[in-house]
Amino acid sequence: MNYDNILTAEHGDGTLRTGVITLHRPKQLNALDDALMDDLGAALRAYDADEGIGCVVVTGSEKAFAAGADIAAMAPLTLKETYGGDFITRNWETLRVIRKPVIAAVAGFALGGGCELAMMCDFIIAADNAKFGQPEIKLGIIPGAGGTQRLPRAVGKAKAMDMVLTARTMDAVEAERCGLVSRVVAPGQLMNEALAAAAAICALSLPSILMAKESVNRAFEGSLAEGIRFERRLFHTLFATHDQKEGMAAFLAKRKPVFEHR
Image 1: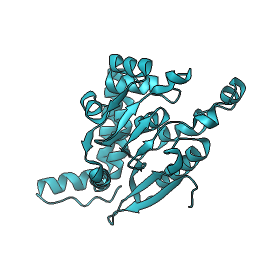
Image 2 (image 1 turned 90 degrees about the vertical axis):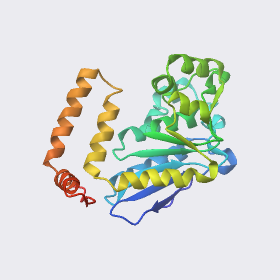
Image 3 (image 1 turned 90 degrees about the horizontal axis):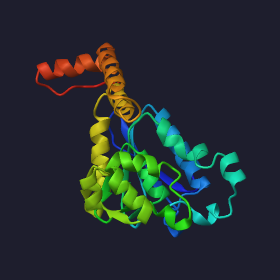
Image 4 (image 1 turned 45 degrees about the horizontal axis):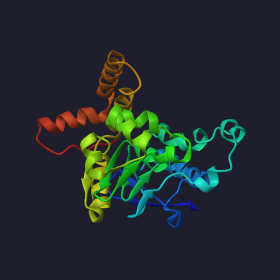
């Protein structure tokens, strides 16, 4: 498909490939508006439904992953338009229902909605020039796409309060130290690192990957006891798959497994 606000590509030559989505509003530093989020959601759903795709990478430019939501588009909105039109929920939440792993490869600014979009992904790999922040308070509003909820879960209450209430930014080193990002690399190595991580995922058994993602996400949505029960049932279920038999047989035979994703 052709999109107006994103670029798409595929990488890899194995059974499963990586889908890459690049936010592409360069003049606006990839500011997020309805049109871009509609395109992003459509591309994510297409890759999620594609049996040849095992992982997705979402990225921006070296200067900006996404500098925030498009303020020019938001400024005139009224309560009737935001609440009545289900602003943000209508098309920003697509990432929450994508079953395949989604990696955010972040360079430059990831502010406001850009930071929130990165946090919706399963994990973040950051270039060392990345800057994360939730500066909405400067506009007389608060984060509205999960910033007050996902940020404390990632970095703790104190850091989240500091960022949300003072609008200060966090650099990549601090973000890794706090647990917001999983790893930090030089800007020139960002996509290589993200694609290597995605390739490692694509080389594994897709049923296991899907269940692992679902189980980790469950940890943030319920009690420990409920999460353990959920994990245990998925663990049991995988013993009905071909790939479990192949993976364990290969281990015992000291050879590389050949997964068929079933």
